[in-house]
Amino acid sequence: MLKNFSQDLSRWYIKNRRDLPWRHTKDPYKIWVSEIMLQQTSVSTVIAYYERWIKVFPTIHDLVQAPLQTVLKQWQGLGYYNRVKNMYKASDILIREHKGVLPKDPLIIRSLPGFGPYTTGSVLSIAYDMPLTIIDANVRRVVMRLMALDGIADTKQDPEINKFLLKVLPKKNVGDFNQALMELGALVCRSKEPICNSCPVNKYCLAYKMNKQELIPKVKKKVIKNIHAVIAIIKKDDRYFIQKRASKGLLADLWEFPGGKIEAGELKVQSLSRELLEELEVDLKSSKYLFDVNHFYTQFKVNLSVYECQLFSEPKIDATHKWVSFKDFSKYPMPSGSAKIIHKLKKIA
Image (cartoon, rainbow, N blue to C red; front, side, top):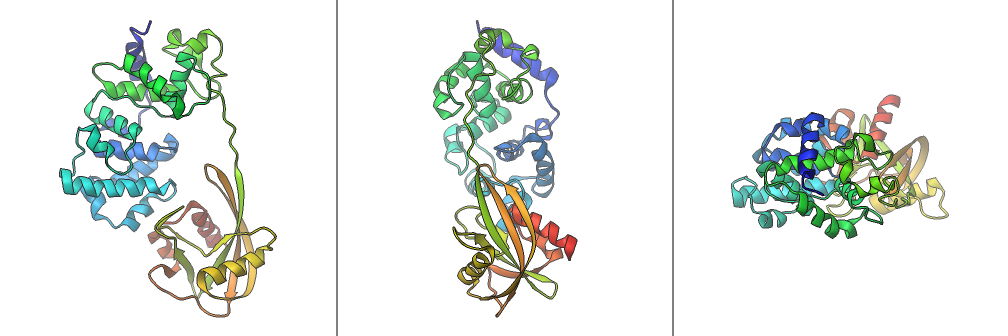
């Protein structure tokens, strides 16, 4: 039944694939960059980031020689900053131990920071045509429909999915085949309203034959948590006070304005006063509401209430606390919420 599956899919891919910048290279480093950027980020968003990145860091040597803060700044807006930190660490290991070249050994690649089964399979199959399977959200959905697998599309399905992929994996052009599976999931076998009549492999699809393509996989409802926080804008002349987050945890090593979550039962001004005392050991003299900023993350929505603050004393300055002018903000990597605040501040300055 599956005899011609890979041929049919690959033939469709050659005719219908999107013209994406990372598909014009076999450079393992550039393919690696694109794969890391594409994790949990849309293709349309990644294109501009990828092209800027390759201009600034055209080789793995350029990446390693740059300071981490410069690297984080180039990544700003893509989120999930551990991805780029792991890439930075892995690049250093590759320079020291492998002359800056990604080895063709999957075991060595898997030992590098940030390389799980998917990244290892995608980079090595696309760059070196190695016979490795890949399973991402698109592939998982496509194969679950092909096999009419019941349940939610999560990693519990992967052993069965991998068995299927090993049966249909071609002997050559594996990278194109893997990209074809992902492309099919992105363009045709979509999570909602799949275009089954345009699918090149619908004759192999059990869900299609059973008219269950809209029911497979089952949808897991997302629970979006709302978080409310206050942000302090502390200004001196034409400069603004910012601080660096810790090197571990959420948004590690990024710069932000002081502030934090509003605790249960607190008024916003009470929360602002408490945060300034806890973070900077300074007392709030007065505050003026400026505006709100909303920002969405994968599992939660953050509402930031921004206040211009006057203090009884100046906060201490050290390596993790700075006074920064508008023109110098570009030197400091910041979370997307902070970047939105800067944008609004410029409008009212």
